[in-house]
Image 1 (cartoon, rainbow, N blue to C red):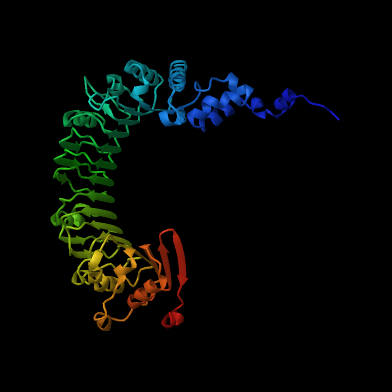
Image 2 (cartoon, rainbow, N blue to C red):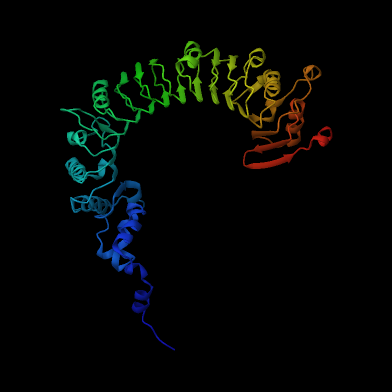
Length: 467
């Protein structure tokens, strides 16, 4: 029997130490930053390597490093890790990405953050992501001017900072700009946008100081999202290459001027003040539109005519008691309707959706008026015979009540639907639901999901009369 000491066994099993340094660096680059900080415990070779000096991605987030509690020692270790990884990094070793998600309560002086940003800029950082939660809402962190005059940054993401433009802006490589909860005004935003002509992706969210937003002169802009800028009163967009546009309105009515765009593929509008006139001009203004999502509280009439549209989502609220809906979209493949009432039967019969393959109907809450939508739902089933899948979401089985006086005049069930998925929030009698659904349609398969319980029923056509 051979007795081997623990130290010898550990040395024999430590194969990582024999790997080349370039492979070790690649392994470190795949780890979260907090795990890189612990890597020196694993291998002699990693103890020799500076844990951060060779990494191209540095991501520091308070929750990652301070999981247990916020003791002074934990905070100090966290700050030291950031400081050493940036200041001790050789200046000739470029940095691909720096993410700093910090609580300023943990930082003694904002000048320390300034020094970290300076160090990253000196090392030609390409992606800079700053989320700096202020000690006081009234005193957000002021961004250093150097950020806006660097030639290497391609992605810039700023959150909960103060944007003040002093001097010229020079960001010739910037492709993506994200501004969230930024203290700024429209002049600063406009100056920043106009000075970055190569931007492809622009995201502006919860910037309360904005009252007017003007986006133009960006020939390469493909994606634009403007989310919940609460005081925004007017937005003007002139972007000929735009492909994806998302707009969620704030508290105030906002005028949107959108120049016709040939390449727009996706349009998502959550705006109570959108008009039917705007929707009627979609085909001429955006001839290649494929996806349209509308969330509104005031539209009483919705007329959509578009020959390229493939996906349509309509979300209506209690103010539209009986919205009139007219859809002419022969290439539509997916349709989602969410509301408190189904559109009038007369409007459903005018729908031209011959290519429809999947549909989803979501009734939010009907209380005592559920039987009003049964004829409309039945009509929708008849208009959706080509559908492969229909999803129906309701709150309870009571919403499928079919009054006795209505049953004799209901048209025969629809047999052409292949798969019907019914989700019910509260249900204990599945046979009741099956009976009500079979009054309206006989799908090949019927799936019923209720709460956390899932029951699957496969209905074979010749057995349907016995169900």
